[in-house]
Image 1 (tube, rainbow, N blue to C red):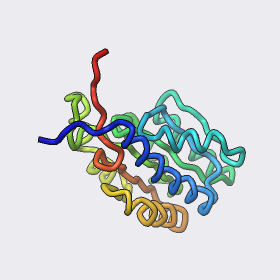
Image 2 (spheres, rainbow, N blue to C red):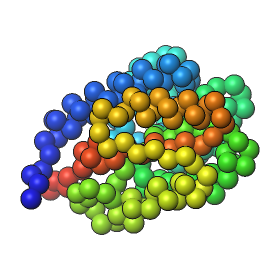
Image 3 (tube, one colour):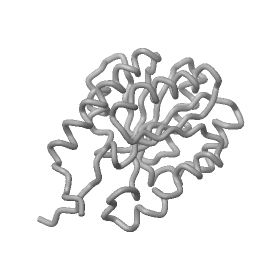
Image 4 (cartoon, rainbow, N blue to C red):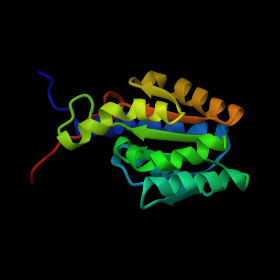
Length: 184
């Protein structure tokens, strides 16, 4: 039986790979980052908010992010959407905008409903996220190990903007650490 993960270790590991992701945003000229608040992305979100060269915008729903980044692209900016796997289902209709118009689109998705999930309500979407994205026209990459973060995200950003494709990078629960329900 696995012992619960140390929350301090999860934050430390998440901060390390999020710094690498943040550096790649500059390399690929990402100017806008939209997100629905999510603890799995919190380190990267905080870094983006501190950076005056990146417009960082909180969305109330994930589909707003699809529309916002489509407009950003049409206006000459590259962007990125951060969301949790549970938000993918909210976007399916909006995904047709980016796939039919061949708008380069990149999303980094923290996964739920996978390895060691405590919340049964997260399992359905978490187990189907990859397939839903694939059926929606996305090229999907999954990252399970911190050593794969830079190479995978670099390749995904390059593919999206060089070929006008929709790219989703799934950050697995093995990478981000599983959430624990702690009653206080």
